[in-house]
Length: 346
Image 1 (cartoon, rainbow, N blue to C red):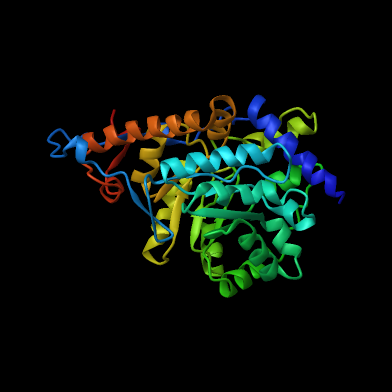
Image 2 (cartoon, helix red, strand yellow; image 1 turned 90 degrees about the horizontal axis):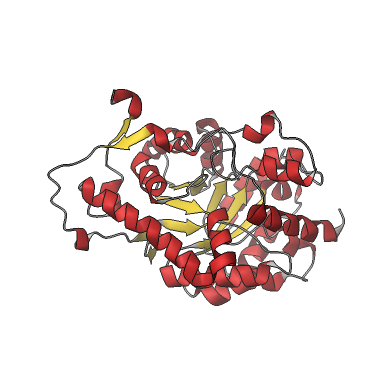
């Protein structure tokens, strides 16, 4: 593959995520199908509600992650710098975009390194695609190199078969990815997190990933950005059935959270996390953290660090109000709150 194609593809992705209509058109994250059980005799002091939690043994200010976005192109450096500054200000984790380009040459290494440089001590997540590790002859060495490049606290392996299938430069051969993932999990010291990119992770896939040794799952379900639409727009194709392909985020969280009885792992909700209501409902359904990418990207581009930080804080003002109204003084208590399917209300 032409090395410049990776850079150009990343430029296209940034542009489309900023200006294109790339959201799911009919499928939602599913959270609208649930209501909180109101607790009329709340005993919570609103001003004492604790939104902090731990992530990778570090105390963070909010159960929220600025999800993996970009890197590997000139436009990415300033974006990642501002995202990292916002993460530091909020004291929350941040993921870098796919580091595939960093394996090709050193040209844009600075676009990744800038994250740790500006994020301080908050958790930083490295990132590479499962399609790349599937065919790697040295997957452990490559992961160690990428982790060191960004001084990562954990590495994210993203599984994006639909995107690779539709991408004109795609590599849809994932055979060998689980085998190499198992090698990586067994031999590197930092945790490995598996994520999708908008089609969701179901229970069967989650079991296979957990059996391979991963320590975190980011479901990245449907309802937010459709990377199928992104690639169809890049290809100048009409949208079709596959633009709506995927499992809603709420379904993924509800089904995978039950695996915590037999496996020890962190569960991250992303995919259509566009407000504080979705954040709170995802945690009440069983997620440990919520994450978002495109809205944060748009905000940091349009309104800088302050705009991105303000948006996240607004979301958690809503979360805090929900915690008060459900009798939850901290995040662990919010995870125990009952969500009622709307079908039971009428």
